[in-house]
Length: 189
Image (cartoon, rainbow, N blue to C red; front, side):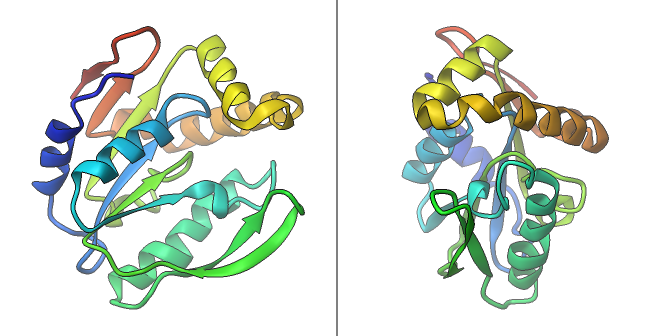
């Protein structure tokens, strides 16, 4: 994926913090669309930034909706109140709750994951980016990234995403849409 990360970082930096002193960049979209790649590119360009992958907030393969609620309740609301964000991360290997995680303070929190741009999160998000690709491309990327562990859960997860994104109208509310199918990503404001 070829993205002008410096330009995107400048766009993000121009936004006012809305979660206390923290500027939140939410990168939302379906599995395998390129959110994690984009988050890493932005983090390399934005000083004093931290990436939070929402996989840590989902309680298993059926946890998208609750994960989106936990993001607001355990991360964004505390930051807005000037308190540390603290949550119990999901241990995907053990399929149970894992360690308690406290996010270090940062100027910009880049949230990478499905559900990060929910309507409930919107009051705290300074810049919402929607990333998408066609379903065969996304599935291929997800399996390449996560291995065959993801394969039996693909349809189940995709159905949750479809329902969530339809109810939340995330793509239509995004400040920027990036389509990553093919060699050259296309963006629209």
